[in-house]
Length: 92
Image: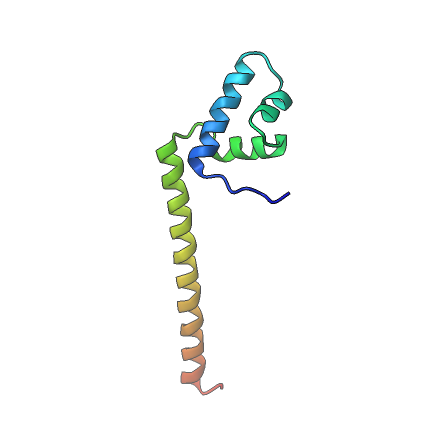
């Protein structure tokens, strides 16, 4: 079965729904079954998104994307710098 990519808003909504079910006395397995995710996914989401509001989660994901983009730019510039240094020394 192909995996579905959930948006941060959906994840937070499902976590809140699971919290309600757990507060009613259900087990974690039952709560996960009701929101149609595995227990492993529930714990991973809770670790990453637990306590966040929807706008905070969206902002976090945007910052992660920006961080990846900046890291890629830095690595490209570092590689260019090393190539130019070697060329300046005459070590082709």
